[in-house]
Length: 377
Image: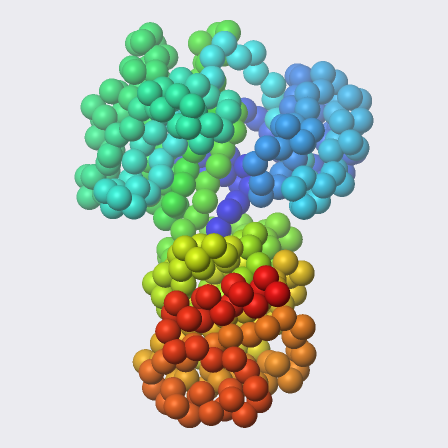
């Protein structure tokens, strides 16, 4: 679950990470009033769940309250990568001497949190990793021990040779990891962490992504969800008990089980197709779930064919087949559907589909090849 920058900064404050004074404005007039209270030049930052806000014109300075009013009028209502800006963070400007990046992520390869730091702050860390990977410092953290003081110092001194700055940053690094761990986050980063002309250290930006699997332990953090910023199809899928992620391809995939879903997408790519989505209907799938899944997939004009790849264990193949038939009758799709249903009641399922002239397949390769072929026709 993504949260806004201003929400991440509130969390950072609780952990003693220094962030500049600032408040959220929903109208230009509120932005002017906040700038007046701050009493110094400010930055106005669009609050949307996408990157590249600055390049899109969603981050601008203002030297006075009146200018803040004008700038807020320009930013509020903007469309940034499909999202409408409904609020801006008005925060104090800082005189910046240097910028750095600090972040904690979960490394799936080592199965540990990893602290990453780079003196090349203020730009996408992905760009730094691609072009100059030697500029990134990485330290694995033992999840039982947490980040140790010497590790925080080691990273801080690699980025800041000056002891006065490094000691401040060392403490910030330890608190950043605490925030990451105690909030159940999958990502916590500061980009940039800046040093000012008076040798103060500030987190000018904040980003936290919360792990959905840990949210039930944090009811206070669940309240930070901004439904308006979430992909509507993904939200609808979640409410229907489906795991769904929209992608850019044209082969709609309906699968049961995350592992099988990933393998199906890999096979689509292997045979020259592009998956339009990840969609896991889960176990004990009812016809209603299948209808919901197809409704979401068919909403995209990119989809040129839909494939079902179901392994019936707990899930009964005939339930899926009945759901497909009901969905076809209700939604009247204009794109071809190919289904592979193997396992519990598969013979019964195949008869159900054949009675309404829906295409079936016996193997994963066959269902994927048929779907790709039909999408091209």
